[in-house]
Length: 278
Image 1 (cartoon, rainbow, N blue to C red):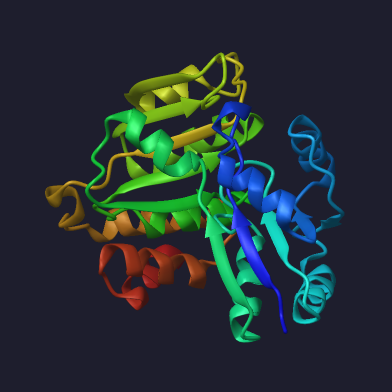
Image 2: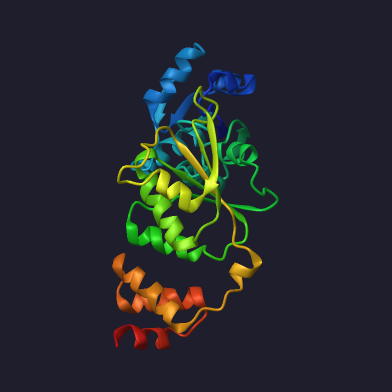
C-alpha cells in the first residue's frame, strides 16, 4: 500500500509560529523532503526531531522527485517542506505535488505561515481580489516583458524579491507601470518587521542603485492594480513605438517588440513595426 505526501508549512521567521500539527507530522513521517537540508536540520534540532532528510530543490527536482515518489509508492510517508512558509507556493514543490496526483498518491497538508497573505493583510492594500506574481526574472528583458503584460491588471499584485535585486525591480516597475501606491513589507515575523507604504516613484528613489538606501531582509512588494481609467487608456501610435523601443533596449528584436507593444496597446503589430523601422 502506498504512503502519502504531506505538505507542511514552516515558520517564515519566528519559530513560535510552528504549529503542534506540523511538529506531529514531522515526528510521524518516514522521511522529510527539504529545499535546503541545512535549513530544515536547524528546525528539526530546535524541536528535537530526528528524521532522514532528502534534498529536493530546483536543480535536482526531476531525479530527486523520482526517488521520493518511488519511496512513497513503496509504502513510506513523506513530509515536504520549503525553507520558509508553504511548500509548493513559488517553489519547486509544486512539481512533486503534481506528480503525486498523477501517480494516485494521496496528498494532504498541514497549513502554516505564508508570506503572501501575511504581507497583504498587514499592508492595508485592497485584498478582495489579488494576483500573486512571485519572483520577477533576473533577466532585464524578461522582467520588462512580465511587467508590461500586467500593466492593465486591475487586481492588487504581490511580488517576492531579494534585497540585492530590489532597486532594479522598483525602477523597472515605475517605468513599466507608472506611479502607483505600493507597500513594501520586509522581515515578516522577525524583530525588524516593517511595512513601508509609499509610491513606486518614491520607492525607486529611496532604493536607487546609485546612492539609495541599502535594502536588507526578504521583501514582499504589493502594488495597486490599474484603475478603470488606466486600463481603458487609448494609446497613440507614437506611444506604442516608444514602448517597442524600450523593449528593444531590453534585448527584444524589432518584430518581438512590435508584437508585445501591439498586445499591450491594442494597435496593429504591422503598423507599429513599420513606424519602428522607419
